[in-house]
Length: 355
Length: 272
Ligand SMILES: Nc1ncnc2c1ncn2[C@@H]1O[C@H](COP(=O)(O)OP(=O)(O)O)[C@@H](O)[C@H]1O
Ligand SMILES: [Mg+2]
Image 1 (cartoon, rainbow over the protein chains, first blue to last red):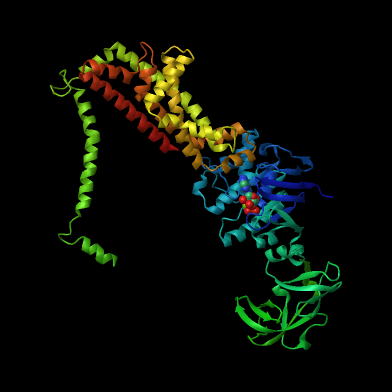
Image 2: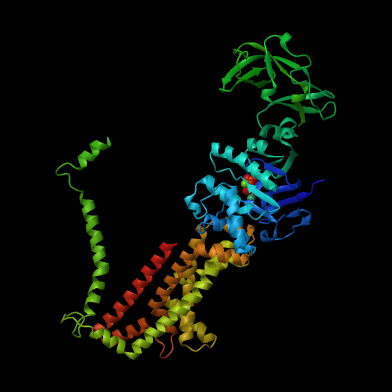
């Protein structure tokens, strides 16, 4: 069994009236790339700051590798932070910034020089050691912040939306690089982001937060394919919601009266919402083309949207409208507005969520 | 559009509007108002004669007289000592007050302290002087060098903390958190991150304090003891008896000293 790097036990944080973090329980394993994902203001930063020691829980306990942190100040915790604004020291060079933590811990000067050099190489800033933060681009500053934290070989690295200020191309490149660096150094990463795509592609596990509460923890696929509730389904990716009622285990009667097979968790008679991702819906003109065992619903094409790599069809089922995403592949059948189509989806792709 | 309008402006006879000319003239008038007296003052410090308005030829006599005037030199030494000591004390205390007000979330009496800190800036010098005088009498402190220094510290703390606070407010507080995150103790974070970043403000505040201390007449006059005059108070007394170019020489000396201080601090700040 791997060790628990960060243990957050029944932690609540209140600022006067505001409950920033609401009774969160979470265990992050050693060596894991863990993302905290949620909309702005949901309490991600506050959670991270409590692990760093920059804030203290109002209730509950935080452990790092089994040791209770209590009211330990940040300088006595085996963690380092990459701040959202980078927080580089403007009056120091890149090398002085990176070496700051080692100097504070009285590491011998020769070792500092060596480790700073290695860290600057690791983040591919070779040759920039004598520059000031002001003389660097946003992406380069971000790398300095990363090197400044990693050089201390913390047991846990905390990152607060580190790529938030970068443009899309650079962000995507840095995502891959961060992931590689994490594998290389083997340190536990706790990564805060509001970008669901970023979380899905980088993380070993994700914790989804909203309004201070931790709603679901799981691997990317689990979060995407098996959302625990409506908020998670809606926040991660795109989805359709269909209301209905559990008819029997694994069967839901939709608001339009149709019976479909779905993944159910609730007793018979429970009002549920089916979540159905646009790309899980296949469209056909003839019932005979549908693979056996699939759910089918008949509707009319209401609208077609062209996205280049894909097309979105808005299908009208009478009781609901649903978006279906179709790859823009060669020989793919096109449907025109007004056509009657058959929408097919598997039982596995429809998750019934209790209200 | 723009080009046509620009062309209209440079048309022959399209002279600058009256308002502009009046404003330019006004600027020159203001400069003359400020600097002419200074130049006249400096000019007559080199006068050979004993009048400050009638030029009788160049000489450095009045500077010689000034440096030979023992009571005046004593007042100068007193001024320098008072300015140095009160500046150091006020800068340390004022910076500490600024940090306490800007960096710490809440402490008992913070709002009251915040409001009262600037009182010396607002109230008239005479009121402040009487207040201090009464205070020194109450605690039974003999008037002399120490009461002058204490008084200068008292009003300088306010000025220093105003200047330093402005600088701290500009500084990103996350930098201090980053320092703490990188294993710096409170003191190390202050010494290595906060202080270097607010240094221009601290130096600016110190310079202001030094200048104010050198300048002060009203408060010093109230709280000084026998034989502990500062230079401006002494000069003030001198004027009441006789006006010779010696006064001009003293004033020129003080002016040059102030200018050296100001330019020195500007250079210091630019370096950072
Ligand atoms: N120092 C603070 N004082 C008061 N309220 C705060 C403070 N820090 C955060 N909050 C509040 O706590 C909530 C969560 O904030 P935060 O953790 O920064 O969210 P996120 O990082 O997910 O955007 C917000 O409503 C925010 O306004
Ligand atoms: Mg945040």
